Length: 298
Figure 1 (cartoon, rainbow, N blue to C red):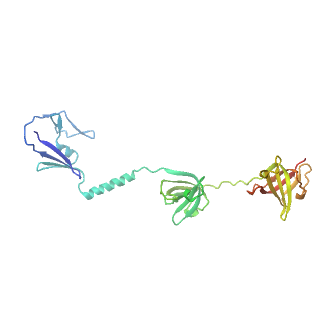
Figure 2: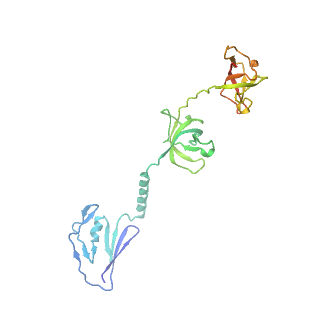
Figure 3: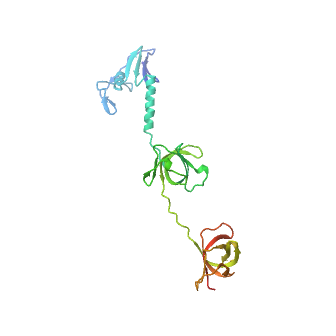
């Protein structure tokens, strides 16, 4: 029986090849094939080395391969030892740390989350945190997002840089923040940008016009007069009624003669066109202030 090769790979990158003598030693015939060449990463190496072919198995020179791979090779007590890489445990640990740092450096950046509009609910300058409520969310604590502000956070308004001290509750802002957040309630995350939005133009409320109402009741109070009106199709239905409060600025006129009337001139059944304040109580009937009352011709 021929000699066997036993290959062992140690934990520190040492390859040991041990020759174990079989009980019976015999002569064998092997062929050297000069056509066999060696390549490392596409380049030819070991040009002077030869390989043996025996029993359909290719045998290559260990020393030549080890030197090509910058490995150390020794032979002692019938053991061929090939050592590659760092064998010092501390150095190996250092290499591991360097690999970890490199892996961190090449980790792709996380995508930013964009909030087009949110309201600032709290500003904590000392902790460098801003609480916001995204637009469309119910105003409950669990819907808030706590933004952690750092030196890398960009705070702006109309292109002008801001500081944390410039932010106040109630401001409308757009935000980009990290996609990574804590699992707390409310969640906390790192803010990338916070831009204070320009205040939306506040349009004045428009007066309301009632085209088809009639007088249901006229009452004199200690504050003046109030007139209960209802829609012509069902003036007695409380769902169709409105209480108009008359004050000194209320104008009462007739559509024909343009004469100015007093509240006491109004009578039940009169058809009216009314312009009143857009502000109305949520009561039934709703109450509001009359701005202009026009008595329509019967």
